[in-house]
Length: 309
Image 1 (cartoon, rainbow, N blue to C red):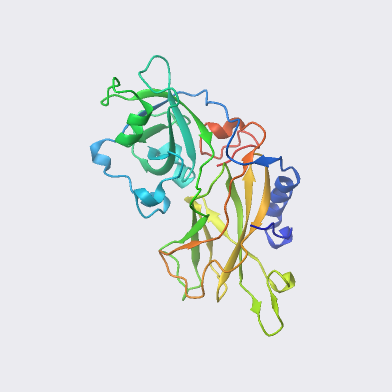
Image 2: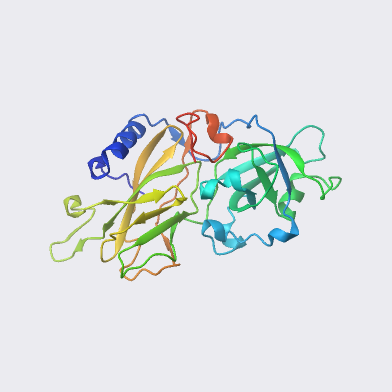
């Protein structure tokens, strides 16, 4: 992965100002082998998915099935209550759960990646509730635990581990080359990060002059993508460039961030709705400072500058 040029003026002025502050104040980052996020002080619960929810497929977050949605390193897939899911902002976020009090549970708890939401009642807006597969619940508890009751748990945000997968983008089914509309959803976002900005450009490869995007950045015209409040995990543009496309994005880790740029073509000229494309990027960043409110929810409510999702 390569750091992209600082071309913030291509964005809206307000967005550019925010990104300038993020990039200027970026703290040191490190690989996901260690992290400092504390346990959320708010109480939550974990239980086995009720039968009427059905099988978790990860479709709500753009994954093609349970196997495709799973992270490496012993992670299980999980659903969360609608409030915690927050219209998709929690998609792909990883958490560690452990039992509170004297519940019969394993010492290390369980690690999960959020891939869906489920209707739930009597849940506080901030705390949320984790709904686990039978395998995930068994990994968190001991054989003595009842599978019929919810368990009080502590939880914290942890880095996602994708040792065998690069960051990928899925072209949403609503996209259309004919109408010039492109909507993208990111999959397999490793580390403990948030994507704060996305830009795309036509992949220039002038073989006659021997230049390319890397050799002649002045030929690259980057175009920003936006996201809507109703679907904050999907990035869109109503005027997609014609031809093969490459991407660059701002990834935040804690209160800072950095540009990442793909080295080559990500979306071919004949990209297809529903298709998944490999960006070639591997994200492992984790904020070196503490995580503040980021541990406790996937919601952007201005807790502090260290919100990750």
